Length: 176
Image 1 (tube, rainbow, N blue to C red):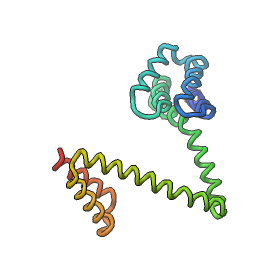
Image 2: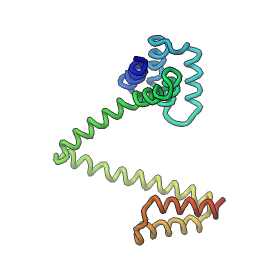
Image 3: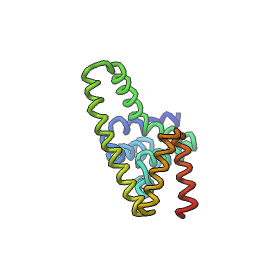
Image 4: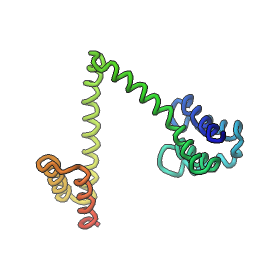
């Protein structure tokens, strides 16, 4: 029964907490402190401070920690799953709807408008990576790495994972 309570304690805030982790914190506090009384307000504040100090989404960190404290390793799994389940379910439903209407002219137009936006965002991201690489290792090594990576991927059809490993190896040997 404890795992069901852990699930509900984090699933309900995930459903009604519009705006992500920070907006669902008061809802999680209500469930954890008031409803189930797993923690005091002071303990919850410490967990919140710890969650804020670590990188990543705060609601998942808090649900993992609180789930672990209440139900062990499986409790942590249940808590994290309950936190991401609303978004996961919504994504599955929306993708199902999108797939159902994939032949619709409106859906085709929408996806055609999204593709250039994604391409621009990826281009900006790549440009920023190149800028930071240029500052970190210099222009010539950046150009050599880009050129060799491009040739490995496009001309010799080397698997991208292997290209990444080769880049890491190069950096470990020559750039450390």
